[in-house]
Image (cartoon, protein in one colour):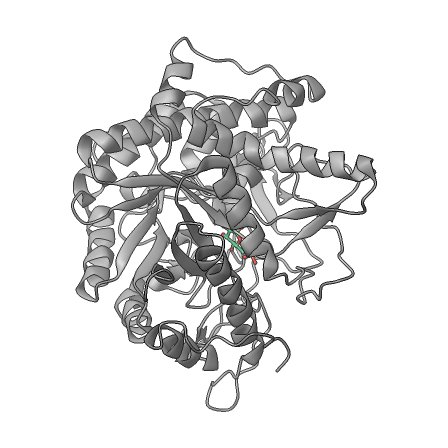
Length: 489
Ligand code: BG6
């Protein structure tokens, strides 16, 4: 792309939504391997076993009963097990991304491919080799790999044994994972994300904690902060040129009305997000953190040198997901980690109720740069829609083209008019993958259609959609195909 709209353009994914191959290459189970499918109206569930052998399940993000251990049940469909099988399709998928002219691929490492339980002394060579093959395949096409070290998951063994991130031992185990990755991929991978969407981490699948109460959650998050900072310190020793960030769910909220109390509610909600990035980019807890801890009666246990570690391990860039915006008012209740879903009469929504708001991405880019003055990666954005292929499996997704056109225009304004240094953009799920929130396949984001249904049936063959050809043109024309006032054409 020509300056100043010069940045990486790519695709993003998470291992448990994309990769599959759950019992190949000596991979161990991760927490997402016990999460069932669901839908917009039926929450996904996590399956467990009680000490007396009774089997049960809880809704996604609820607490486990006392003594329960996460486990797989027979005859239940778990979307992470095969996902869309990137494990066996990676060459084909990367070739398709290259055909569009993309220059970046963000993907998540499956922790248990590297350490099947999390506690082994030496990493699993088959796992390292698989990711090295993926990286080499990217480099062959001049596609820069960006690695998410931990995307909302952990080894099931560690979750069951230690109650996940509530236990400080996780910091050492995570650092061991980082060490194996940095040593193996130094010189090949420059961009790393320590964690994905820390600010929506909740419950067993993400944190490995049986309880989702405030004390457990905020303490676990403190451990994640230390783990991220230690990863950054380690990375600088092993790969001095590497750049590390973490990803935050940053879709903006707007005050519901101009009532001053709605404004205050909005400020409080926004601080729920900045609590995370302030610690990780500035290196210390913001003063308002104390008011959260008081509100939720939380006491954070810190070790003597934690504050120094946070200071030393600040991240190099901010990265975020932004799919939608929301509204917040004085009467809305914030959960422990809130991402409200307020309606906005000015915006249309997707079938999953996510308001479509291209301006939100320009807003967020400015908001974040004003706060941190560090470069920014947009690492997730995109439209989850129901695609209807014709008899040749071609999808004419003009709605997705419109969505991308309008969002790219706003990014361009943030870069060219507002002078925000944006390093890159990776669209979520460039090759269709399984939805995180609902576990469905029918909520598709990709430029490439994957023949698979909600229960995993289908050939898993890949078919470029109309948006694939549009994206190719977008890259080739240095963005000159973008149209103002395009929505609805
Ligand atoms: C982000 C996650 O929250 O949103 C992804 O990092 C997720 O893992 C994406 O897939 C879109 O959400 P969903 O629920 O539509 O898949």
